[in-house]
Length: 164
Image (cartoon, rainbow, N blue to C red; front, side):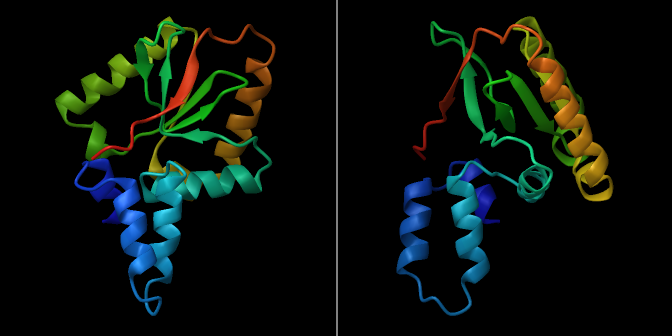
């Protein structure tokens, strides 16, 4: 619920953090953790779980929900996780948000756009993150190792605007 308010731009991250800081501490521990995750770019429970698995599995730190742009500033896309050194994106796509006809088309167009710029995309579902943690971390580490053998895509990662 907290992440959704930021995702739908119903409130700015700064406002959310201010409210959490001003609130009484009793009974707000989980909200405080979630607020800090949101500031770090996490936008869903599946992303938070994936981030924890990546850290535990020894993956390098990822940038979460940063825009990937060309050197001229043209938006390429906004992957869930971005490994900047390797130019690798991780997309965690749930049926709820991506299986309707429009969502499916948007997801396919985004992956095709990433590919057209030489960006390798590792697609996961939230259920795989939960049910196959070792397998997805191994996939990621293998993909990152492979990506280091090819030229890095000519793109930049920039933090998304935090305005509501």
